[in-house]
Image (cartoon, rainbow, N blue to C red):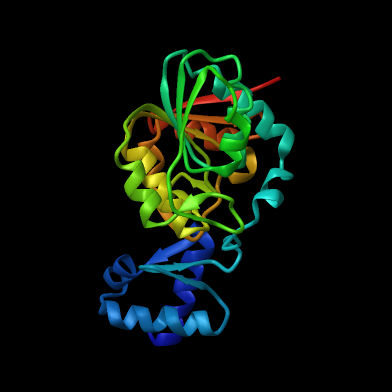
Length: 255
């Protein structure tokens, strides 16, 4: 197989699975990882793929970090239904961690009647939603505020979060794929999510149907790391079935 044929095969693999990895391609073609990196760099310069750490993804794979306002207005009805259902899994007296996602914010909007609830978050949107509710003990972290995400991020916030433990976390991400797991367009957000997952016993993923089957730029963890996926009734049946086969509890939120 010559170089052109090999590069065409790489593009075919990306079209089939959405991504490729240097290590796996090196094994497949019996070449050095350096040779594969050169192929990927060439194809990226040609505009045929997007380079990522350790591999490449298709040009159609999302790499755009939307602002908080743009995200809030997308699939708002589905997010609201998911948020309401997710809030029923949170009990009085719980200590929970919430990220800054807009679906997570919908969860927070349904916590007003909780008693003696402790909430730890890096999200300015979550703080604005819960601040002033007497029955909620609200904790946040220091750090830099992202100008698009309105989330508190960076090394200081990551170190602060590592001092807390909680019964559960509720997280939302930019992409949820059966093979590639959870992904995000922001390295800062991905870092925070990893810490929330590490510091909690039960992990709840809230994701509307538009997130399922999507792969974005920064890997977070395998899908099987999650305990519960809450999505909406428009989620693909095949995705739900395969997620359940992998051991996830999948909850379809309905009005």
